[in-house]
Image (cartoon, rainbow, N blue to C red; front, side):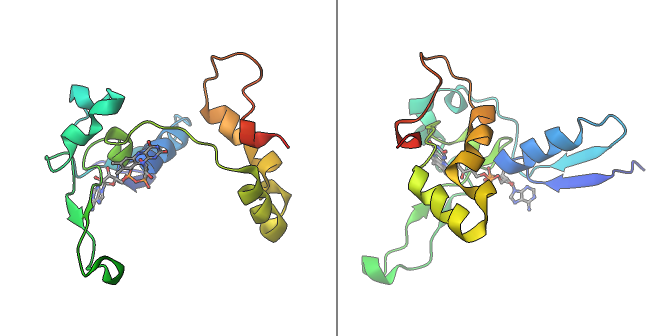
Length: 141
Ligand SMILES: Cc1cc2nc3c(=O)[nH]c(=O)nc-3n(C[C@H](O)[C@H](O)[C@H](O)COP(=O)(O)OP(=O)(O)OC[C@H]3O[C@@H](n4cnc5c(N)ncnc54)[C@H](O)[C@@H]3O)c2cc1C
């Protein structure tokens, strides 16, 4: 029987990053367990095609509880059931968020959570191909 140092349950956005980072150390054995199948459908890589995956085997096909504010209706709530999780069924939009929101975190939790504290991590996640330095219009005062 194989033994692992870490078992990551769910190969979604967070699970895949976590497993990739943990397995950078060749001495560490990592298993990733995913309930859904492989991410082979072309619609997974075409941004505007993601609704084609709704209510297929790539979707958990959840519904919300009855919503009192919506006359008791239940809403369809897509969630990715596939390697990549919701990042395989999402719209591929990238938004850093507004500086003021992060600065409010910084006020409450310390400078590391302020916009200036978090911006290096945004940059690390981005591949910037435009001009300038990739500064968000919301990232400057
Ligand atoms: C339709 C849609 C459009 C979106 N558009 C955007 C967008 O354009 N830009 C953006 O930034 N965000 C978007 N999002 C949000 C973003 O994709 C999610 O917030 C993010 O992917 C969630 O990551 P996660 O790791 O928390 O969960 P997930 O990526 O959902 O990962 C969870 C994984 O765990 C698996 N799993 C669950 N239970 C089990 C189990 N018991 N055993 C094994 N595996 C299990 C699931 O199958 C899934 O693969 C969108 C989301 C949806 C649904």
